[in-house]
Length: 109
Image 1: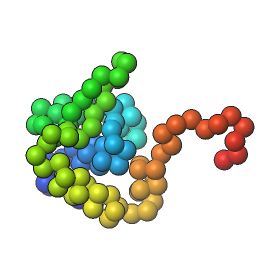
Image 2: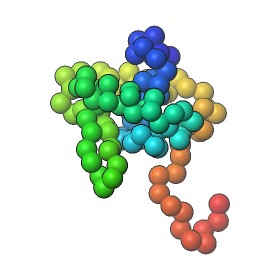
Image 3: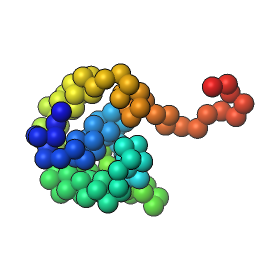
Image 4: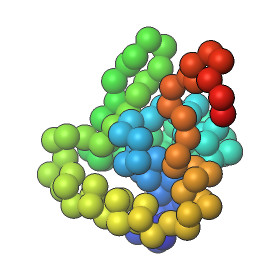
């Protein structure tokens, strides 16, 4: 939906992922959407250079989130949440409802 506005689908997926989960890293985003890490990394660096995202090191990972000092952060979050609400239920379950922590040992599925 935002491909025309952002320039490409990878940038759209990166921003939607981060808007949904709050933060993300190259490998996690690439694995979720089954796209190359180099494409995701390129978009993350481009968005960070533009002031839209901010990255921080956590161990050997670089975690990215929407820049809290971005002057249009609220409008961007609002737009991304609107797009997330318009995505089909099957696509939402496939990409935007993944477990973020391990399951307790012995717990039924």
